Length: 480
Ligand code: SAH
Ligand code: SF4
Ligand code: F3S
Image 1 (cartoon, rainbow, N blue to C red):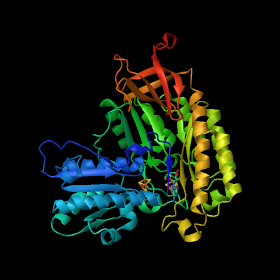
Image 2: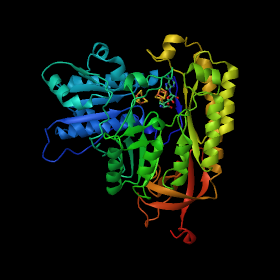
Image 3: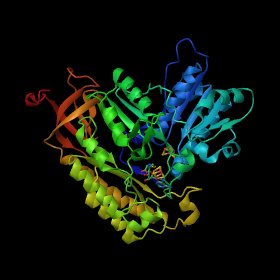
Image 4: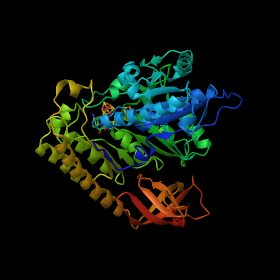
């Protein structure tokens, strides 16, 4: 199985398996070391920061070397079969480490833990503890249980848990961009998708705690927050006394108002729920970035119905037209699945024509992978041969590369406001940072500017994934 991904920050392939580092809370060091690594979506990375926060309160310190750890946690993803295979392979490596260090605790967290529950303990003998995404507050007890010689499992899903009061520890971060979870779970039942089973019912986090967290981040130097949820457009929160109601458009506005120098991004929008009110809010505030990730999955209405996406081709096109009308400069990215059950060549061509219509800036493209327990697994045969899935994928990946290049080349000759994130991966002589529209820009270092500052950059060249340019002076007419 291959997944072809054009990386950006939100679904960054290079972060898969990244180990999280944190300092122990002063005076609480318990002498034990934790190693935690994460797979899957940004939500999982954000959850690992919550786990780190809970365990640092217990006096754990982190290590980058799992051989040196007393507790190894792997925060897992179940979205496609290959995501799970990757985790199982990693567990084999941990088994060797555990063999050398008796007493080492190995724990599986996240979506795979939730999907397989106690079965994990039978399947993978080395695993001591299995913890689902809503049970992280119980980790200290579960670790105690393992220390006393038992195996431990907590995979209870909750209708309320949002970890609203836990400030995530953000030590892997560059101190400039942060993910902020605004909701958990998902109430949609897309037939291909395992998330409603691994993450439970949708619930929105207290708006006040979100605004407070973003304000704290800004005050400690962060300049960009990405609000996270599986379906951010269905965010809704009412205060306990019933006097305040906040929908997603209101929340975007509240976060944007914290400071004009705080950039606001969000993911993921759902085509059935994204409202014009949200689009007008994005258009109104300069610091809400002009970038929307709007997964289409398929361009054909019959396939969309089988997928239970609850919109059709016309509806999706109407939403794209609304974005282009209300936010003309908006970049749009998408997710596409090839070879869903019974998809014909003609239907696949409608996905291709959708890509021609929208000309996406980025796309994340996957072959359909049947997931046990999902509606599609129960109702439909996974009947498209792997070779056909792969051929369709290869075709749309090539097409997307063409459009990514077209969209980036349209920026050449224009001046973009870029938030400097740090040095470029390739050279200490270059900075990198993203434009408002989420394109990565690389440009020569100018000592007068530091990471975390905004600069104007003239785009001069591009590859299919990156713009290259040079810093230009602020425009005096704009009073910058
Ligand atoms: N909540 C987001 C998506 C979360 S999963 C949304 O609704 O858009 C991220 C992407 O993984 C999905 O958009 C879909 O394209 C892909 N995906 C999910 N389940 C899949 C499966 N069984 N096989 C292949 N791709 C899948
Ligand atoms: Fe999965 Fe659909 Fe929910 Fe996205 S909206 S997480 S694809 S069920
Ligand atoms: Fe995310 Fe994977 Fe779970 S995409 S919600 S970690 S199944």
